[in-house]
Length: 127
Image (cartoon, rainbow, N blue to C red; front, top):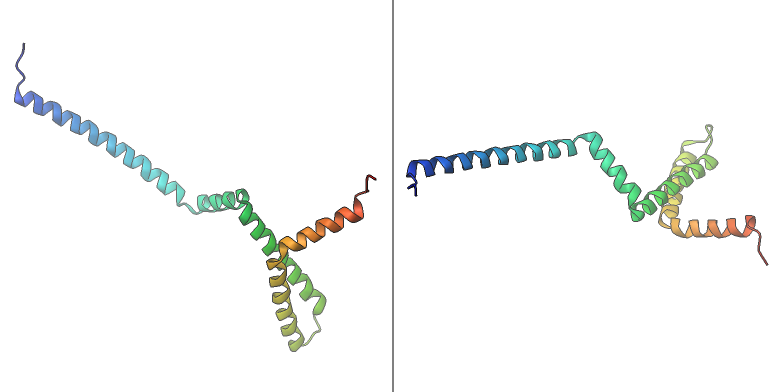
C-alpha cells in the first residue's frame, strides 16, 4: 500500500477548491445575467403586463378604472363644448372626476346591470 504524501493530499485539495471556485463563479455569472435581464425596462413592462393579464383581481380593477375614465370623459364632452366659459369648464371637470370615480367604484354592479339588460333585451326566452 502506498503511503499518501501530505503534499499530494494538499495539491488534491487545492485542485478541488479551484474546481469549486470555477463552478461558483460560473453560477454567479449566470445569476448576474438572469438578474440583469430581469431589470431591463422592456422585461419589467412585459412582466407587469403578464401579471395584469393573468390576475383576475387586477383585471377587474383595470376594467373598472377604464370604465370610470371613459364615462367621465364622455360626460365632460356632453357638458362642455368649445364655446363654454371657464366656470362651466371647471364644473364639467369636477363632474368628470365625480362621475368617473363613482363608475370605477361601482363597476362590478354596473357590469352586472348591463349584462342583465342585455340578456333581457336581446336574448329570447325559451319558454
